[in-house]
Length: 370
Image (tube, rainbow, N blue to C red; front, side):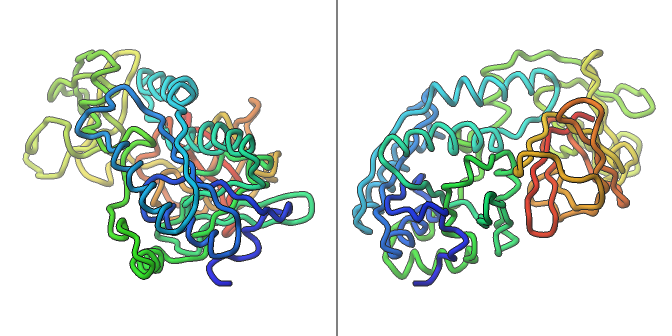
């Protein structure tokens, strides 16, 4: 059969696979591929957000209807499970703490590690699953005694960045049916087999929360603490509503309007001084305050179970960024490391993930501290 490379099949040679289904085209086609391969496939729809279930931005009900429709078409059983409490305790609480501290977390990374590949994995195994699957664009490679996480062949859709905190145990019985298929081909498959969601727009919102207006959403959970907006020279040019509502490199929504000094360059968020509740902005995409040749990371998680040997690798400091050559050094503190870059990196943001690669192999990463 086509579409599923043997490296994606766990060593346990599964018969029953439980796949996470979101209602989108990726997980729908992944489920169909597995069914075509002859696996016993069960779809699992995860509901992980309940605070405003009836809000206009919550599409959980429509997503569930899409899942049921797809399951009926391809001929698999499907069930819904509620992980709202786990999501709030394991992901959302940390998300708010990080924003309140002036950092910019990536909830999708933690969501994968704590919900999709922990709570979901545990539930799937309780259903008698031999393996789980998702519609992520990534690959796994099994060797004797270990498993590697690899980039997807479609570099434009690769999601290994979001999966870098997964462990050997979590990856051992995971399948990524789309890892070797271009996204364009996925949509063609969906159209060919008659999936009604073949042209459904990809979700780009926060993991499980959806595509709400982000500032409005945060304002419901974090207090507004206005403070000055200053230039690198110390000139006050405006007032911000709270450091939590801004991220380094942000260009839109700063509220400064046009140029303050006549040079016409756009304003970017350049630094956050949490102690003094001050937001610093700089003009020009290449302002020195927006460029860094080094970063420190903490809370490292390595897929192999141990840190790589210090040396030359490549890294991403944000999703959809091209890999950049770097030099890995291990920090003195446990689970810390530093990266040096020959070419300056733009808007390296505390709270985001620095993810390390050796070619196509995702080694793991950590949380950018400074």
